[in-house]
Amino acid sequence: MGSRFPSHQLSSGLYVSGRPEQPKEKTPTMSSVAMPYTGGDIKKSGELGKMFVTPADGSRSRKSGPINSNAPMRTGSFSGATSHSGQLNSGNRMTSGGAPGYVSMKKTNSGPLNKHGEPMKKSSGPQAGGGNVSSRQNSGPIPPILPTTGLITSGPLNSAGAPRKVSGPLDSTGSIKLQNYSVVNNQAVTRINQCEEYSFRKSFPKTIFWSIILLFLMGFIAGGFILGAVHNPILLVVVVVLFAIVCVVFTWNTCYGRKAIIGFISQYPDAELRTAKDGQFVKVSGVVTCGNVPLESSFQKVSRCVYTVTSLYEYRGWDSKSANPEHRRFSWGLRTLERHVSDFYISDFQSGLRALVKTGYGARVTPYVEESIVVDIDQSNRNMSPEFVRWLAERNLSSDDRIMRLKEGYIKEGSTVSVMGVVRRNDNVLMIVPPPEPLSTGCQWSKCILPASLEGIVLRCEDSSKIDVIPV
Image 1 (cartoon, rainbow, N blue to C red):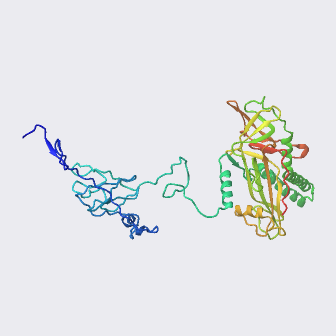
Image 2 (cartoon, one colour; image 1 turned 60 degrees about the vertical axis):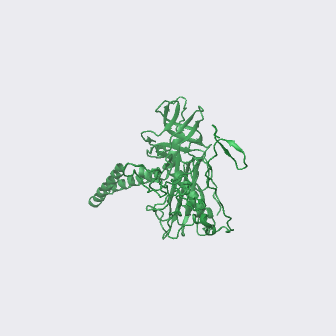
Image 3 (cartoon, helix red, strand yellow; image 1 turned 45 degrees about the horizontal axis):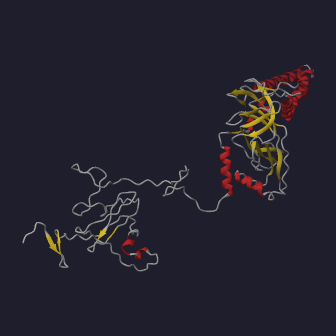
């Protein structure tokens, strides 16, 4: 007897309508085998441990095991380079692994498979015949992973892209050298050399000096000729007296010229910044404050300074070494000089206005700041000042058996200073800049002082602190 609706009988004997279901294909299940305790040795970890063992020849190529084409395949993907590897056996067991971000340059059996279960050839470009590679391959080395902190770092990087760390004890001398190097070599700091210091012998015009020498030479020749011919010594005596007077004047100016210039600066009238015009040469006295780059004294490490000077002198005896090529015997000679100045602010005493003094960035500056003796070293106390020995070592200076004297001076924030320069007003900013031409002091007849020239900004500290000598 036929029926319009198909039916079938279940295993329990019950008839139900509908056609019987087709048996579904079972999905492969993952099986695991208990692994023995390895004690942390990856060589005893079976197939999984072999993936982390570096081959003896140093290569990092990976090889996959036999592939069963009838079994379904599962692939594992990793970030970095697109790479597929796996191992299938008859029991549908599969393991996958690989090093993230690692690309092997040698031929391997891992990678994407075609429809026949064979590995496809890798290529960095399009295939012949117009076919495209189904998996993207990146050629060339992978750049190092940069740190994700967002900071901009300098210096060499390690393989992970982070700054390279150097192990070992820290050297305090090296850190001090690095700090001093960064401050001294800053473009905002002006380094004043010894040749820029005032000297009567250097400031006196060379043409006038050699003209005077030539006149006296002619006078001596004429006086000697008249004395020999007429036996009249009057001309020779006059020439000798004039020569002696000139020598005394030159010696006086050489010894007391600096003190006379300091007196000229002190007697120069102060100007008021409120009424000073643009381009006017003025002298301003007031309290100083540091600018963007404060300085630190070299030996005593006095912070918050606008001007520092440290000088080392050596005494030369009969058979001792000279400190410089111009060092004469039985006198003190300058061996090294460190003098720096940067931009700072000065508050005028009279008007209360604040002006920026442009002494940094290589500006011309003529300082008159007194130095005080800090350390005196001789044969008896040579090994009793470790700070002085360390200071010499930082500058690669040898002490030997020399008699040395260290002087230091500075202008600290809050000191009273006199500044001479040209006023500049720019967008409500009041500045004092170096003058375009040197300032002449003129002849001081009452003191027998010849004219001298002051170049750049003149800096004079009127209340320089008295530095005590460090006992050694």
